[in-house]
Length: 121
Image (tube, rainbow, N blue to C red; front, side, top):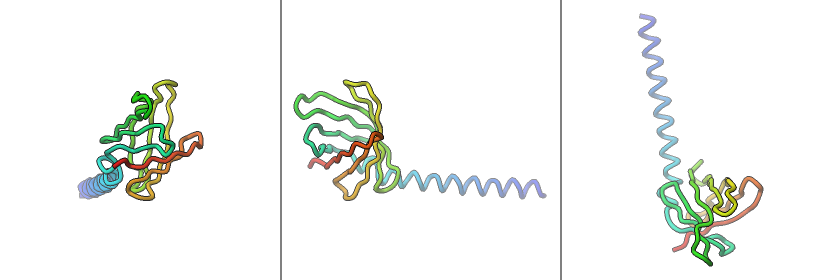
């Protein structure tokens, strides 16, 4: 009887934990893909980041060349993490971005460099 109760209790805890994790995943998806899909222009006018379903590429405005490629995930409803590799340098980088409004991302990379992206309509 004790073993059966213990198994039942562990099963209930496991189901509860899976439900909690599933709820967290739903929150990530609300803030990230596909909500962020589209083109996001850099505030300095150098590139446009093309975001689509968790992947992105930055395309230079002057040449049309891809200058970096990477991925993004939502850490919270208004907090996004970008990870990318520069095509020219081959260097990896990462940034956390806050989304103060639906069409703006304010970001800081691991080196402390700040940049902003604004959704292109």
